[in-house]
Length: 387
Ligand code: GLU
Image (cartoon, rainbow, N blue to C red; front, side):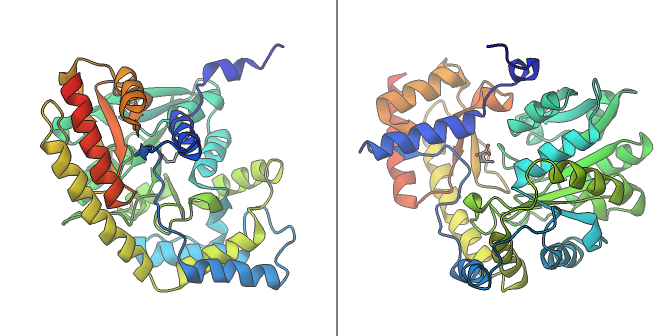
């Protein structure tokens, strides 16, 4: 069988592969502690499920517009104004099958052969693969733990070439949990405007912030950067709606029209009645979001304290998202060896940092219950002692 050459250019998603393996082991009765996928363990809040059930009963079971239900697009535009100070209309919004689908469609809509896309490392593992699938070239810019894994304006400026089309900004970030300060965002915006490139701001972890961290959407800095900004977000992480597959992008009209054309020939609309759940999520009280965030605050402390007490492991206490990015270099193992042995010998699932462009680290998600976190950290301690 001769497959298309593009298949050989990409690797399958390791986050999905490892979490599927951990789930399969659990189904076989093995006592696995899984810190693999970034998936909150909470059920979707009741009022969101009720709204989707009601939509089903009301017959919201037909095709809808490819770009999404008008009511949802309006609710998203209003949310972006209210929470993010971004002046989009409903026409500037497209609803997609999850944050991943948003970004994939965006790459197809924007990236031509050999266009360069700047991605700071560590990065969420799907960004470079999506760029490659679209025929473009990911330009990886390494960051350091010393700078909290954040790209500096100087680094961004140096990475820009005449082929640069797009810069991928992800704050709060996966896998590191780093959050750019408003000043840092403003300084990156200056480079974007001066060098006239586009930026996609992946804000999927926007609501999961700790201590005194704040979130500034880069598109809100000024009108010049707004024209060059694509804002990406979704419902999975804030509302524990991972399986619903609902994300969105807000951007200049031309980009939304292009994405709509692509979507109209690929997936069509997102599941119609599910979109009514999303409308309820966005238009109702946000108490459920805060309740889950407070649970993450506690889990972050439990996991971080445990890691801090394990010799030869180091990690920053992150300001956002729900991951710890743990440096394992003192154990002498690379990240794949570390994660494979950890799963085999202690039944603890973690994601090797190599998937995110940082082989000296592993990613642990603490979007799971405190008992499993405590148990998993005891096993991790035992494992590191044995290395
Ligand atoms: N974004 C989540 C993660 O990084 C979900 C898995 C995926 O889509 O990669 O774990």
